[in-house]
Length: 265
Ligand SMILES: [Zn+2]
Image (tube, rainbow, N blue to C red; front, side, top):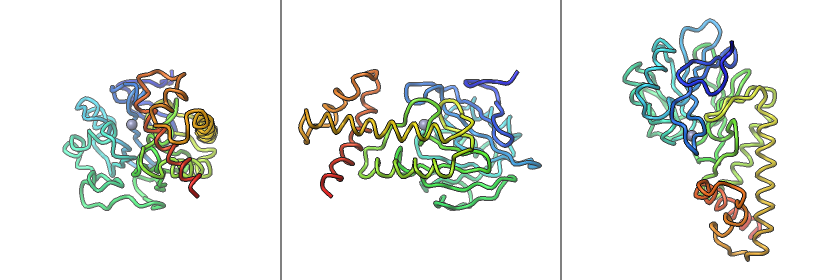
């Protein structure tokens, strides 16, 4: 019988070229845990690993076992520790080069990832899409039949936005790009389950962001235009578990900044 998400400690095949190993680090922010994607083109003995996951020796050992240690390249979707913590254990075990946007995570004789770069490796053609919003260094990896989205688009729920200036405007552009390039391709997220088609999930994200923005616009009429992020969270995220409010606050900051920039222009 085919495995289903979440399948801790087992390699679960998802597409002809992509399998997933789920790290055992579930939490409110990581959902069931971090998905480490193992990619291999037809006829290739080598793998590409996307996101080694947290600093967890057992998870790294499972990656090494699943790939036979033959990792031509490891790619990083963004700098958060639940994606990058395991890098050095994996490099030590396999010697894999590691590429990311953030120079801090480069390992081996490599360069930082560039937007729209095409990487041909392990029988795969991988296009790097810059998809900032969750973090400034967030990227997605486009394959022939799938798109690996990191934390930009998750399998369930929605993504927390960086509270940095421009994060929401960037995030909305990233979603438009993912909708355009990912339609008809499988969605392979870093948390939560995969989906056969990325388009409806990305569309849900776009709708959700527009809805929240509208709710915040309305809340500001009542609270006053200079209301603080936490006041807005209390009002707009009243339906959301309070333990998620600190994360919501980051997203609200990004949305307030977006609305204020809009009014200022
Ligand atoms: Zn994450």
